[in-house]
Image (cartoon, rainbow, N blue to C red; front, side, top):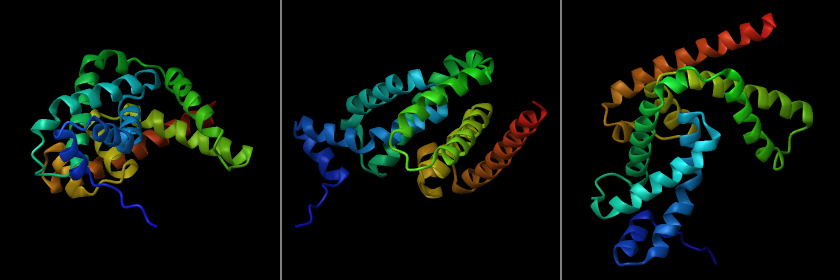
Length: 199
């Protein structure tokens, strides 16, 4: 018999009726997506888990205020985005001076964990890992606005309408920002490729 998954709306209702396990289910449902978003926005493997935890604490503290005018996931990623932007403002100088080596080192650790579950042959995996590294480095060079738009659309798969609600921007602005962000990302990837050829 097929098990019907309880909706986010129903889980929130249960939580408001003092069912703490309902919030745990929401965390389990979204933790990985939030973590991946934080990791790509902050480019810092060490902090990603802590920041993800802080985001869910903020969600827990504010869930009573959630009015349901948008989906829970839209509201959640709006909180996550705001939290990441605040965090980045705090460490702006540090990010500007972060070396390619440190970002690559963080990526290696991520690869080590994911390699255990990979079906790729070693050579294919090496090529894939290099591409991932390049994207991580290129993403870290973008402004937070461009980075956030790319992560939400191209990595997390949100629609333009959802991103518009998450960022509080008109859909047209989201589309033009994404277009500029993708162009900038391609430019950064080209620079990385040229530097590699010079070595």
